[in-house]
Image (cartoon, rainbow, N blue to C red; front, side):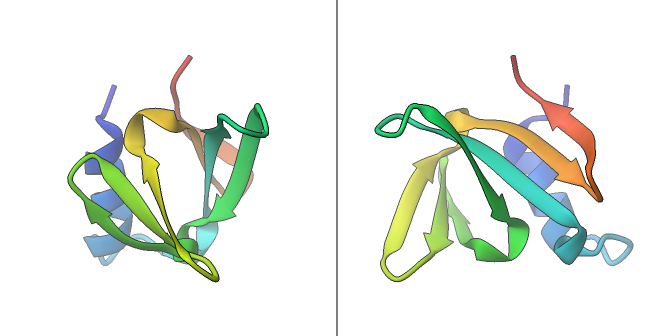
Length: 79
């Protein structure tokens, strides 16, 4: 399985990819559920975190990313 950081970088930098087609699902420990965000909400990858561009910056550990979808099809998933 491709490491999640490699996949997220590929989506951003590969000219053949359209980041607007991707959704990222991560597990929120407080809400205890999967949260879906569009790829465009990722401001940057920093070490083992993705920094989200919300009202305030949020740092989400990459190990909490559980699924990546492209046009409603799963392209990456962690059990």
